[in-house]
Image (cartoon, rainbow, N blue to C red; front, side):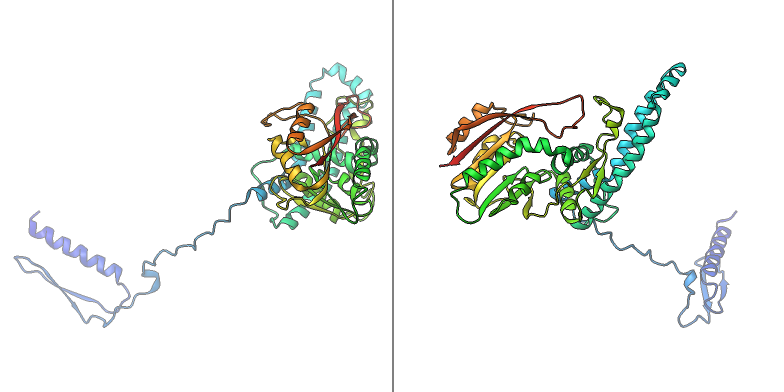
Length: 406
């Protein structure tokens, strides 16, 4: 094929493309004058003054979606709150899984032995446990929903990390603090503290300001606030306790209004089969006395020095990472002559920078300006969040003392 023919064919292709792109723009005629030698010229007769295109034939610019606004990152406090809320919401999934694993193990029992298990009713316990887990979940859902409303989280907001122990801790602590079953346990440790405050603050005229760090679910703080002329502040860093306490205070209208089943996965160490399914009904007393709860860290949330007539630490000082920081802060917060009342074990965590004996703690306290009343020192046996009929009992030999700020 000659070069001239190739050029003519190329020109025809170009004209065809133009015809496709401009099919409706008005009459279009094309005269081709092919002169040899090239160049080839193309004449367009009667062109429209302005070629009009139908919109479907125009390549439209890509419409960009508006940029997605990234949510503000959560603060450390918001993370902790949302994690507690999520943990309460996920209780049922975790608990039903524990029950399912237990049932799967039971089903490995040889077939010839199953009638014996059924004769004592063991095969019915799994469904009994599931039913009570679902009942408990109704209360925990109410707590989680209220916390979402209180702290401004949407129903779909969930945390990446779930701490099932914060829910199990709540279920144990609510029995200790707010049920009839916990009354004996409370009496053994609350009475020495209340007596020490009454004696130690008898000389304070007017309002007596008391701080209770490590508040838990708050029963001790409310017992103190029930006394005449006491003003109580408290703080708590565990948001599982905080969200449950907020619900208890703000959404409870009557004593024994709520019921949970804390022991449905605690099958060992039971005296009777029904012990696994024992309910806890609460509160046995409405938390109507005024307590000011400060959410957060004892070391950072109280900037005002020499504010309190007394600081009460119950099962608290051993949770410190740095015990010197705790003791120094107690000293700073007390008024001159103020009273420190302590009762608790020395169950130091692995995170503690020093794991001291009781004697060493008292030595440090003296060096930091807290004069210990050595006559007040004594050991008090105490259980903690104990199931009354359990065949297992951990007893802490707690240490009690009082001290004064010099």
